[in-house]
Each structure stands twice: as C-alpha cells, then as structure tokens.
Image (cartoon, rainbow, N blue to C red):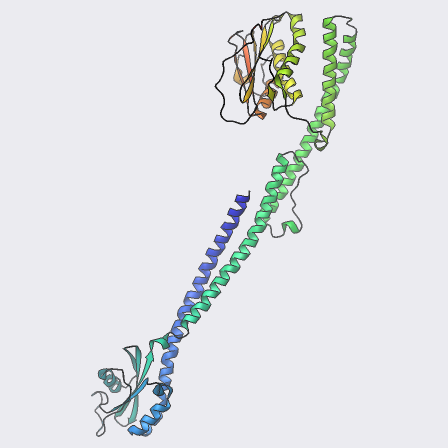
Length: 478
C-alpha cells in the first residue's frame, strides 16, 4: 500500500509539472519574444529621436562648426555614434540624382551608396554595419538640398534588458511549477491517506475485526475525493451486512443445536436403562460426548466474536488419531469390522486445533461406518514428512462412485442420510494449512481411500517422498 501511495503521489506531481510547464511555456515564450522585440523597437526609436534632434539645427544652418557643436550636444554624438552627411555647396541637385556629396561630420559607418540613396529618396531606413545597424535619416536643409543624419545602433542596445527579462520570466515559471507541485503533493497526500484508511479497514475486516469502520465525515476526510467517500460508505454498509449475517448464522446454529436437546435427553435416558456391559457403557459415553458437543456449539454460537477466548493453535495429530480410532474401535468390534492403525506411534504436530482435527477424523471414520456394509474392514495410516502430515483412511467397501462430486459441498456420497458436509469440512481444514484432500481407491483393501494432507510448514524444499509404510506387527484386529 505504501508503494501504491508513492506511485499515486508521483503520478499527480508529474501531471501537475507537465500541465504547469505547458501553460507557463505557452504564456512565457510569447511574452519573452515580445520583450525582445520591444527592446529592439526601443533602440531604433531612441536613434530616431537622436536624429530628429539635429533637424532644427540643420534647417537653420549648414555651417560645419555650428553643426559640429550641435552634433556634440547630443548623447549619440557625444558617444561617437552619430554623423552628419552635409550636401555639397552650390547649385541645388536635381531630384533623384543621388545623395549629398559634401563633407561628413562625426564618425560615419554607413557606405556612401546607402547615404546617397537615403538622400536621393528622401526616406529613412536602416542598414547593417559592423557591430550593429545604422539609421539613415534625411533632413532637408534648403530647397533642393538634403543632409543625411546617421545614427549608429549597437547590437547590445537591441538586446538590453532582454536577458534580465528572460531570467525573471524563468523564475516566475519555476515558481509556478513549484507551487503546482506543492498543491498536487498536498492533494495527493489527502487522497493517499483516504485510500490507506480504506485499505487498512479492509485488512482489519479480513483479519476478523468486525467493528472496524471507515470514517466518512469530519476532518480526516476533508479534501477526499467524492469517489473515495462513496467507497467508504459502501465498505461500512458491507461491514454492517457481514455483522448481521454472522449474527443471524450464530443464532441459527444455536437454535438448531438447541432443538437437538430434546432427542438427546430421550437418548440419554434410554442409554441409562441399558444396564451394564461394554456396549452400554460405550453408548452412554457417546451420548454424553454428543451432549457436550451440542452444548459447546450453543455456547460458541451465542458468544460474540470479540468475546471468544484465545485458543492455542496446534496439536499432536498422532495422539488425536489414536484417541478417535480407539473410540470408534468399540463400534467396529460390535459390527465385526477389522481395523488397523499404522504410523501413529511417533508425535506428528500439526498447526490445527485439537477439536477441529478430532471432528475431521470422526467425519472420515463416520463415513466408513455410514456408507459401507457391516463387517467391512478399514484402516488408518499416518505418515509424517518433512513439511506435512498425511492421513490415509481406507476401507474394503465399494469405493467412491464419483470422487469429484463427493468433494462438492452438499452432495457427498449421495446416499440416504448424507448431508455432503463431512468431506467439505475435511477439505477446508486441509486447505487452511496449505494442504489438500484427495479421494481415490485403496491399494490394500480395494475400496475407498481418503487422503488428507496437512502442511506443517510453508512451501519449500521437501524431503524425498517416502512410500506408504505400515508399522511392523500392525495387524488387523477384532
């Protein structure tokens, strides 16, 4: 979930950076180009003003000393960036015959041909010269004669202030991106926090905490997307429904178990009147145990899940199997069934509760007695490997007609009195440890064989699989 949170926040940050960068570039690049053009226009406009400043002086006189003094009084003239091309003295020039052929005052940079063109055409224009541009401005000094004022514009004047403007615009763009990243990170943090709360609640519910709920109002969810709030509402509704269903299931289990008390009472009274004998004692013992199990079911069903006492997980499978086989052996002797127990001499710890394993063994042996004829032999083998404990229950009966259907909940063997839940309970216990349940045919007795595998450690290297073993001297008994 942390990785999901980081990826979501990074995705939002990258989207914010991309979007803000595109918007900033769309506005700042044209703005920077406009600043650059403005600086260029400002430089040429200043040059035109400098040229126009000499117009009145040239209109009054073309005396070189006077013009030189006027030229020196201007900023451009004082910096050596201005020159005046005077017309030749004498007769007026014919229109269109060329520019002035008189003296040039100041530092000239433009070619004579460009100066003559400006004077002859009577219009101002700029020409490129080494180091920049020259503005040529014609000025009429008298009838038929034209002087040309030349103003030099350096390259640096055309880009003055542009670099500073670009730096300021870049700083503004970076500031906008930083603000967008900060806002996206804060928004992403709120969304991730809401998603983490929902995921944590789901994990808690899966772990058995039925009281967990997702907050859908208050400061914790301020700024959360509407979709996550709707998901929180849906989760809370689902959790409430789960609690209701579990409560109804516990009540149903308690009610059904309580209905068994009346026939159990009659059965206990009848067993008490059987007199003495092994069969009578076994019957009374079975009735007493059945009554205790029913009482335990009722108490467990009535108890709230959070009030359930902690139960240690783990037991010795060999010990439980010996105990349950011994219990069923009395009934086997009464029905003339030969039975055999092998491999239960050594401890075989498994990660399941003792009561659950006992119920599973009873279900497997009960199926033998219920679905085979009186006198049919059966066997129980226990095989402990490096990572699992395998329990084999076989019989000499007709076997499973349809093993796949027998493993489906509610179908079972298909015989009368079968609910089809016994093998399903066995399968669930096996799968809770990572093991499995398999049905087949017994290679020794020829009938059905049920293979229960309970894993004792996670999947990994497992020792070489051993063949089926039987203890020496383990013989069929009556």
